[in-house]
Length: 244
Image (cartoon, rainbow, N blue to C red; front, side, top):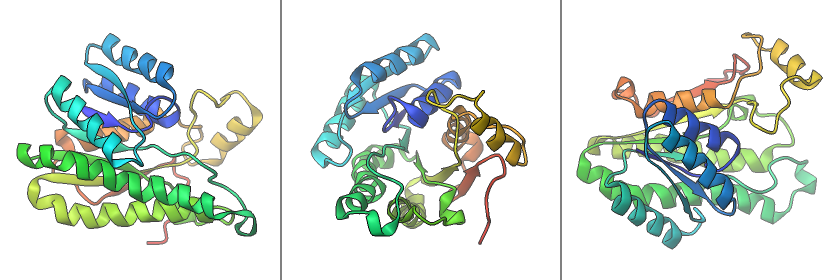
């Protein structure tokens, strides 16, 4: 089973759907969208696995600890953790960004990731295995302007992921990254001119679904990826500028 932070909507909800369709029970974490989280958890149960929604602000260590305690109490184990949650202003010219914009991105890109990994590590260490997947971004390689706050937070996530892949490996815990492009979620009209033109611009010639991010997460959680850690996997339909 896996915990998906920010799992009530957007990419997080589609990650939960993909995991449950691949036989993985899910904890749908949310901060405010309780009804949406409960609906995603119900979808998981309809797919024949366990699904529960748990509210917790992942920036708050005590709330995260409570979420982990409830998960272990109700589901008995934690095999995987997907760090996906994010909120706040992600785009804007540097001159227009405020301190809060950067702080929000650091809080979700670094603090929240530290909180959740710190909380799940004891159970994973005791079990001798665990899978952590951090949702980063294709923009890490592309580095466009007007994304400095977002990239500051995601850059912190990349650094934490790489270091902990090394540090937690001896405990049987893998740490990998999935880097989405612009993915089609429930808020994207895939019949719109913008979506269709975007799809045509990609090597694969289509606008990818956010569930394809979930498929990548399912791979990293599976035995197929048992010897993979520290990896950075772009799921972008080929739109990436590889700089190294």
